[in-house]
Length: 487
Image (cartoon, rainbow, N blue to C red; front, side, top):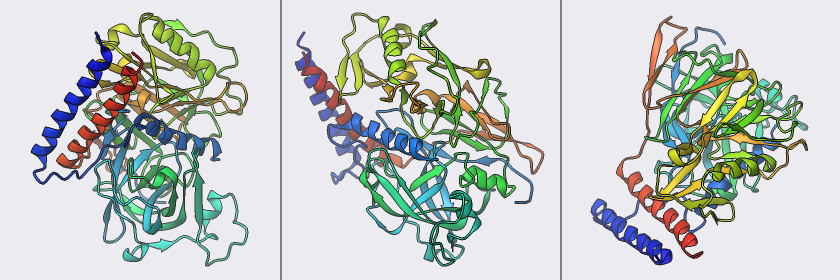
């Protein structure tokens, strides 16, 4: 069989089908939303998104009764689709809606502001972008460099600080992209019951990929451990307990995100957080592939003063140190010795496989301190582009273990379809396989009752569906044409 002709024919067939769908959906032939990853560098754009975050991770250093908070989320973690999860916040007086990425790997909430340089004006994800204007909100207040928030964040007063100078922030990412601005304080609505005045970043300048529309949102909602994060500010005001949970649904999209103590289901599979780390770092002890423990150097997962394994909902894929990545990949694909692997965009291992991946590939299991384990199924770590075309979501972090810069980072690829709890009061994290389209029960400390928190899926109607179809077409064509060129 001439696979080159077959795959090219399939791509042309997809073009005709989707062309017809677009005509049916939009009589005036307007494409309101484009594919997320434009051109033929689709998978590279996805990994570039993660690379920016890795640069940040490696470089970063009240009164009243508490209640449960229900954050509605949208998006999904599938690498060939949205590739991220987001929520909607109400900010300012009068309140306006802002769509922000939910991110456990960063420490501040920031949104793009009016007069911002190089801020995106539209989003290929399908949401309407809004620029925050402090002057249009009657409750907005500037945060100056001499205020407690600023001196706490920077461990002291900044050089040259005067009472009239704003408290600024500037973050540069691994690919050279950067965001900069200043802090303000304003009212934020999280759900129908929870709101309050909080400090967040007002984005004044964006550079590099952060100014692109391919993955644009209004900002990022940081749920890290630092005092500047949303969860820390809410807890300090007495509005919530310093506990939250998420269940990211990459089957139906959206999922569950709740602040408070989860009482049902009871998550018993827990491991302590590595002390004195800015992010959610845990101590990995071993990896199993298909029931066999991967033989690795004894110091591979030593933590000491290092970071350990980072749990990060803002990263799409999963990254292993090179000396871990190679033996894990070898064991995974040893079950299919006749499989032909093709390297796409110089980094993604893709192949053709027509059977059930859950039946044909091994389960991967991570073991952590306190006998906690996390199971990752083939349907999770392999993502499907079209019919029988699959790619591996495991990536090499490009760093060696044992040199102080080792980084194992588990993103949505691993975290999706699991209920993950973050208990900062007891400094532990836990998880269990769960149906993220269902619900959980969270204790409401204010009323003494138990709240049921259901799944949500924020979307933007049919225009987003058309955009996803077009984006999916270009992603498929990129991979299939590269594979067919090898035959």
